Length: 127
Image (cartoon, rainbow, N blue to C red; front, side, top):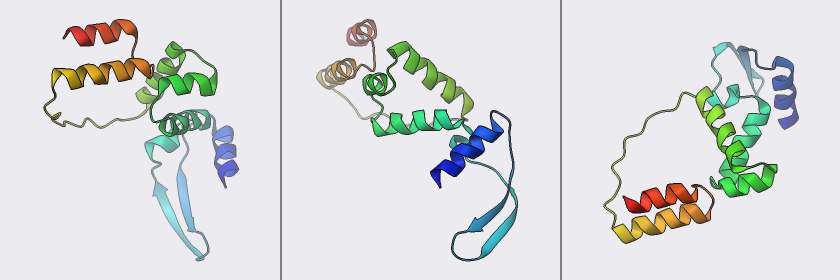
């Protein structure tokens, strides 16, 4: 089944396409109409694989560098390009009260995972 989606996205390329029929497997029921694809399904197959790996690696850019054999800026650039194709929802959540020590630990952990640069970590620690 996974190859079918890959083949479909290869055939359509970057062109938009419409889904007009859905068949429920094993039930004989088919529904016709115009169905919108979820935002992730509108991405190129290669970008879907990239997003899936990003989730599998728990958002570790360092792991992404290893998995795809590319540099930090390349991973960040590709994530930014993919994000620009998605209509992201702004979520306003008040962060829990944090101590300076906990915040410093978080910054150092992000640096260790390769999620931020040394310069970015220094800037955050100064704040």
